[in-house]
Image 1 (cartoon, helix red, strand yellow):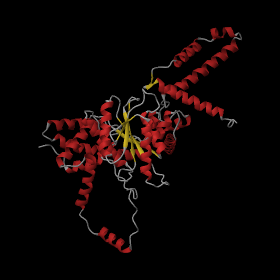
Image 2 (cartoon, one colour):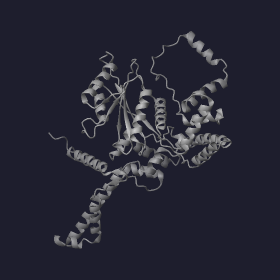
Image 3 (cartoon, one colour):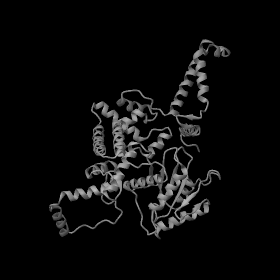
Image 4 (cartoon, one colour):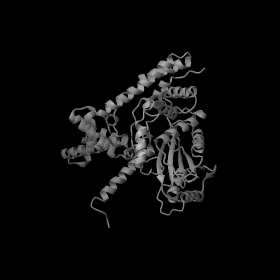
Length: 474
């Protein structure tokens, strides 16, 4: 007989492994309800005032949450899924990533998405296969255009004034080192089951260090229904994609951030892209200003207390599971209990986003933002990314060379003897400049091509700003 966790322990672990529910009126996708009459309102009020049996309500709510976190089935099956999820989390198995990347409006936009994910026009060696829900593989631009037009006509449904999205794009990703072929097969199998009544296309990309699959789904299914995936849907997508990976021998997990003992970063994609360009997003500035206000007022961050309370709930849930697993006669359950004990003992202390940004240097290269961020951290940290730091050192070197040359020319008016009187400091600066100008193969884990691209983009932006300083040219 297999070991079973108690119902109370399953309830507590489901509260950790399931994302919190957010009930918002009017987001179910159906039609709005008509105002109720006075008689109906009285009936609803009378039903609300009637006594209810509390255990039944708690049991129904608990069952839904447990099913959402660990799936349905008997008590033994659900308990096995919960123990397996805790064991994978304790071993820090890689987490799958399934997130939305955008929406496409109109056939032209859909075709542009097809061209991007298939690398159409990038050369014969770089173009990748575009898999469809009809078990076809597209390589030709004409076939992609026909498919995009079919999606648009089906989405419009004869309404020429409709302005809704035609398709929704997602990305399914795993860390570096994952087998790309098995990742692609898992993603295709996931799409066939999850979107069996919809048209979709998928393409595998291995141009980065981590393999990932781009998935674009038609917003309207074959029955004419449109869908709006929410957070619960994406949590289910992650769970099913992780199952497909595990079926093919790839260790994968799909858990919320708090189940892993970390705080969600809540980093918008737009902010990450802005940081990649060497600029400072508004969210970083607002975090720094908030940290400055708290520092000046002399009070602690209220977010810290909230995060500490949430982590205490997670710890108590794990401790309850450890107590029951330790009492199990099975040696495997006892090993899992010891693994969970080690896991919760190494949980990092909760940290607010503003404090994390100041500690890790996510505030960018803006001196004002940097000073605000460091005011709360209390210690000087290098908040510049590797490229910005290299450029700053290069500017300092140039300034030092100019100052040394100016002082040398003032002491010796003969230009031929300036290098002789420059001294060892100037020679050291020149050597560092020559060393800095040599393109390394890797800079902070990033390829040299990526660094060159960022430098070119920054130089182009500076040229554009200098060109338009006095107004546009005619």
